[in-house]
Every structure is written in structure tokens, then in C-alpha cells.
Length: 101
Image 1 (spheres, rainbow, N blue to C red):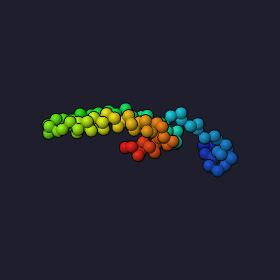
Image 2: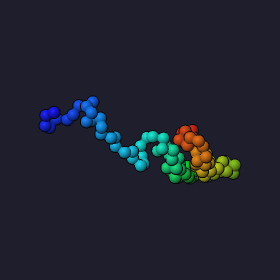
Image 3: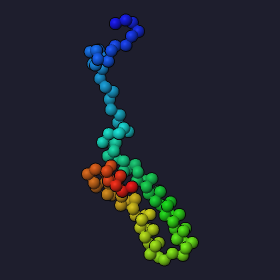
Image 4: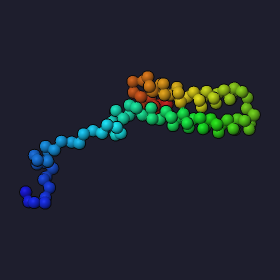
């Protein structure tokens, strides 16, 4: 081999180089998908809470009945926690998280 040239990818010297070690976090494998619901939970709770405030202002303007306020409170405040528990106790949390979006 001439100086300054790289070996061919199929030569034994290039094939003996071990692959880089896996990263401890991140990536796209099943281990990173497993805890996605934990990362989504605070954002889901914040988004549903802020959305509930906006919808509450519309309900207030329209002088909506009390049952609509109860439905809004149940959905905006309860759904993020229910979705978290559902994903936490499922066999495939990533698939459950996708189903609850």
C-alpha cells in the first residue's frame, strides 16, 4: 500500500476495526422508544392545561352550563395523567403513547 492511501473497505485490516460503542442515551432503538412517554408527559400536561385555560375563556364568554366546565376540567386536567399511567403499565409504551396522542 502506498503512503497516504486508505485501505479498501473489504481488506482484513479495515474489517478488524470494532464498531463504535452504543451511546448511553438517545438514538432510535427500542431502549430510547421505551421511555418516550416519560419525556412527553410534562409537555402534554402543560399543553392540555394551557388549552384548558383558553377553552375555559370561551366557555365563560358563552355562559356555558356547569356540565361543560366539568367535561373541560376532566379532559384538560385528567387526560395527561391517564395517558401517562396507561403507557407506564403497558407492554409497549411507545405504541401506547402513539395511540393516546
